[in-house]
Image (cartoon, rainbow, N blue to C red):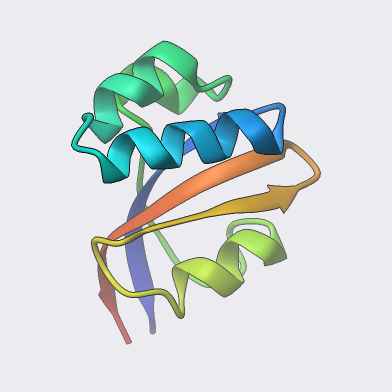
Length: 93
């Protein structure tokens, strides 16, 4: 069965999400930005969501996590919780 490990940053606006993505692209640390900005409790651990399988996250999240290039920041991804930057850190198919 497929599984993935990922980390994310959850914010309440698409604009902030894009600003953070730009900062990461310019060399800022994903985990530090997650600690500073993410409204998800996982932000305290750098946005780490651990390991999970298909169907354990909301559909918008699953679509990205199980198709995106590993170690490439994706987003903004809109869900019912807000806007996410996602980075798949590993995946098995």
